[in-house]
Image (cartoon, rainbow, N blue to C red):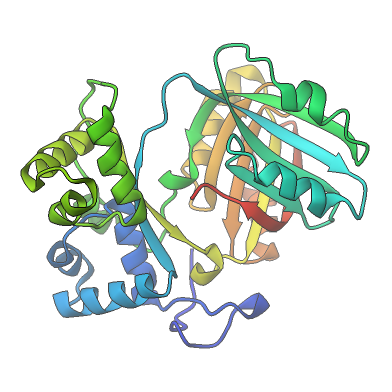
Length: 326
């Protein structure tokens, strides 16, 4: 995937958003693999000086262009439902604002056409009584229809997406060792450490200790265990338009059951796909895409989806990402 060489203050892309330089994009991509990697390690892999890494990282994070956060893995009993909500024109913003204020909805898009909302709602338990779905939305006069699909399998989450600007050797050098298979429940101290890192994922152990009140030695030991056990990971938050990705689209696909897993895994690895979920309903595979332009979207639909056994596809252009996990 090719990206502009425009610098942080250079020529804006579509919509007036300045695209980061190639060097800044490479640094963002490296941090996606390991948000806590030392500047010296980043410099060695990327072919920069340590001073340059520090300078670029300060510039990217100082104004909020890039945020690096630590995040605990989601509980094993956490489920999700995808909602497609069609609303009367003129009422979309009102409904979207009410839904976005809910803690159980981490993801909400509105369509470019202005008449549809796509949201993800977290649920707990095997068969929860979903009051939002069963009572509140149907009782709202502005809502004309609601489709709900239970998420059955997650192939890729947005935090697992990687900007495709590094070569294979660089990606391998930056990829942390696989997490241990053993799982445990984080305790209060673990959660305090994670909360501090949610504000700044590169915070030092002494910085975390200052914020949590735990000794730095305890923080270092627990932080190493959280990372080794796969209970904590770092994520990089950046506006995709700053990466030259100006088209945000959701695609629903229909696949025969015997093709669903293989195709889901294949498409989840595509550089444009930042989310891939299998769910109930006729459209049993959902993809969230970031692409440079509509020509790239057309190539994805007409070329990358061919030969996979897909029987139907529906595309939703995102007009505005109202809420994304943060």
